[in-house]
Every structure is written in C-alpha cells, then in structure tokens.
Image 1 (cartoon, rainbow over the protein chains, first blue to last red):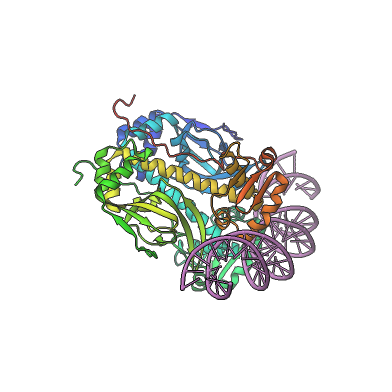
Image 2 (image 1 turned 90 degrees about the vertical axis):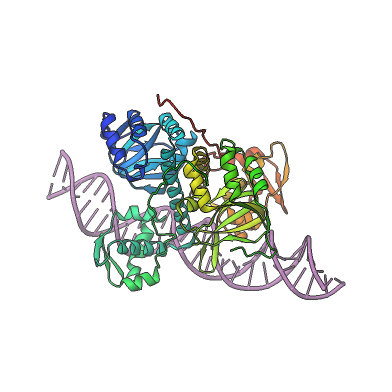
Length: 256
Length: 256
DNA sequence: AGGACTCATTGATTTGCGTCAACGGACAGG
DNA sequence: CCTGTCCGTTGACGCAAATCAATGAGTCCT
C-alpha cells in the first residue's frame, strides 16, 4: 500500500494520536472519550514526498487525516494522471469514500512530506454513528470540501488560463498585504497543474501579466500595480475565497 | 426571490410536508418527531420550468429539498452562465451552503417542473445539531454529492468530447438492458451542457458514433452493436457509476 | 394558413491551449 | 571536472472545440 523510497515511520499510536486530534480546532467539540477511542485505533504516519497513500479504486481501510504537509489527488486513466485537488492540513482525506465504504475515485500522493493520522475505517464509521458531535464535525469538513470542489469547477469553466493565473497571483498578493515582492508558494509546475494547464502554457502566460502590474522574476512575484491587477483579475470570493471548517455544536432538548 | 411566469403554488405546510419526508428512504432512520418538527417549519412549493430558485451569492434562507422534477445549478459570470450540475430527486440542494450559513456559489433554476420542500434554514440547522440520525442522513447526502462532483471533474478532465458522449450513451444503453432503441432522456442541448460542450459539438460528434455501433435518429438512440460501443467507451464505475444515498444508522452505547 | 417561436443541423472560420521538441540553468554525484 | 537529472523557457506546429452564421424542421399561437 505504501510505496515510498524511505520506509514510513509509524509512531506508536495512543498518546500522540490523541494529542494531535485534541489540537485540531474543528474537533474541539468532540468529547475526549470519543477522541481517545479513535486514537486507540489509530496510527500516526509520516510519509516522504512522492509516496503513494492510496490508489484509485481501492476500498478504504482507514480514515486518513492530513495533519501536516500536503497531498495531491490525481485522477488516473491508463498511465496518465491529472491533478484534481491539493489537500492542505488539517483535513480529512476523502471522508465520503470511507463513510460509504466505497472505492476511492482518485489516487493520493504526498506532495510535501506529510503526517497522516490513520484511523481504522470501521472504528471511524462506528464512532461517527455513535457520536453526534463527531458526526457534525465530519459533516462540516465534508461540506467545506464540497464547496471547494465547486469553486474549482467554476474557476476552470468560466475563466481562461490567463485569468486563472492572474486570479491566483492576486489572491496570493492579497494574502500578503503591503508586501511588494513575495515568493511563489510552490514550484511553477505545481501551480500549473493546480490551475489546470500545462507548464508551457503557464510559462508563456506569465510574462504577459506584466501588462497588469504583475511581474514574475524567477520564483518571486513582484506586485507593481495591485490596483491594476485587481481590476484585470477581480478577486471573487465565490471562487477564490476559502472557507474554514466550522462545525456546529450538538444541542439537545426542547425542540421549540 | 422566485421569479416565475406562473405564480408558485404553495401548499399548506404540515401534513403534506411530513408525508413527503416520510416517503424518502434515506430519511427513514430519522424520528417522526424530528421530521414533523421540520415539517412545521416547511413549505412545499411547486415551480414551473425556468423558474429561478435562488441566485448566486444569495445567503440561504431555507434548506431546499428536491422532491420531484429536476433543477440545474449554473455558475454565473457577468451575463453568461455555464452548467455545473443537474440535480435529480430526491436530494438536498446545496446543503453545504445552508449548514455553513454561506452564500450559494451558483444559481439554481428549474429544468423540469419541480416540487421543492423548503425548510426554514435555522430550523434545519438546529434540527441537524439536535438529531443525530438526521445529521447522519445529511452527511450521507453531502458525501454522495461530493463524489458526484468529483466524478464530473474526472469525466471532463480525462475524456474528450466524443468520449464523454459515447460514455453517456453507453451508460444510457446499460440502463435499458436488452432494448435496441430508446429515447434520449432530455433534449440534446441539455445533454451537451451536461457533458460540458456546445450543442454544435454534440451535433457534429453524434454521426461519427455510428462507427462504434451507436446510431442516433432524431431523439432516439439505436444500439446497433453494444459490444463495440462498450469497447470504444468502456463504462467506468469510478466515473459513470451512481451511488445511492445510504446513511448510516445512529448507534449508541458500548464503545468497545 | 401564416408568423414566431425553439431546437437541431451544417458549414466556415478562429483560437486557446496542448503537444512535440530543443535548449539553458541549477544542482548533485562520481 | 564532467555528466546526469530536474526545472523552466521558447519555438513551431497541430488540433479539438468554440464561435459565428445560415438554414431546416417542428410546434404553438392567432
């Protein structure tokens, strides 16, 4: 299952797993009882860059939670793969497949050295079926992921390649207010695949963005005219915005 | 909010809403108490073809459940819209937005005259926060929708226009085993937008599919060589398959 | 019957972006 | 030092699909 160049380091479960989960804010509503129950059935795993986490069509044996690093989800056909999504910590990895006991629709691979919490699938499912607060937290995670998917679909459908790049850079600039130069967060080829295009297309489009106040030098972005850039590539919260995971808390008692 | 040519018919809530919900199999695990509580805060609505259900960026005031008919979700930019997904009954309409009190990412419009159950948003949210079984059912719906989205993304990314058409027709044929001719389920322009292409492209591609045992005459598909068709456009359950909504049941008691 | 719709088809043309290929810089290892 | 590999850039080319445009076929309405 894990094909890695370096052998994965599997820490003894228990303590570290519990601590990890208690540190996650969107799990703060879940009782320690439930979390430690899950922790007992968990393993914390550290996987090197490039390691394959699971294969498309595989049926999940664990619920995986990404604690650190990033992983990419790849749709596979024959021998070619195209990127579907990049997952950031802290989040569940395709909870839909685990909950439904259904085969994964994509392949998952480590992009930047990742720390994963693996919870035995049936332990996870029965915990969700037993603990309302956990159920709400998973629901919140799943809902957030759904919206992210839909935003991606919108971006690809109604923006051209150049616009996607522009919006990406504007969003980046807005996340670093006041700064005039900043480094690109990842390698350009990753940006390209994240934006649904080839490296060549990205490479060709970048110089043209100087016309809108965005200059790239090597791996750093120089914001020369933010107003112009925002004008050309308006930040759309319904596409570029990122919602946090925010579960509701269970209530009980009086319906009225 | 509802701009319809014919005025929407709003039935008195209570009884009919409750009956409607009790008839939904994936809500069968939810107590009658909770359902009737929701029913009290609900309205059943019948909307004609073309009616707009809600607008992109609007914040949901209701949780909408599609009971009959179909609705389409459209990503909007300026004055052009592109189809993101088609919703079939019975399912929740973008529960993620309702749960998170977040703006809708898309516009929703009635394709075939639709019956909707509108549940007041806060009543719905508090019911989910209160009733574990309901929470599980909503989670199942949301998870299924997530997987559907991902399948769509895969289809667009790794199949050409012709392949998407072929796969669509093969899936259609497989749903009518033994039959040699069948009518297309919807108008061709709807098929085109569902498959992410223009009508013209669809129109041009259809005749060429005869080479693979699929002939179209007007609005009916004639399966001349199913084996050939399946060979050219293999049915991939990880793209073409449809999972039903199947919620878990709440359990309680002994963790072990 | 005759307009006025919408839907589908077909043609001509354009174009965005992918593909193929070659090349240069940065690094690492023998 | 030279030689591999990886990443990015640039050029030439091709192609799938969109766009623009015109023409039937079917249906509804008066």
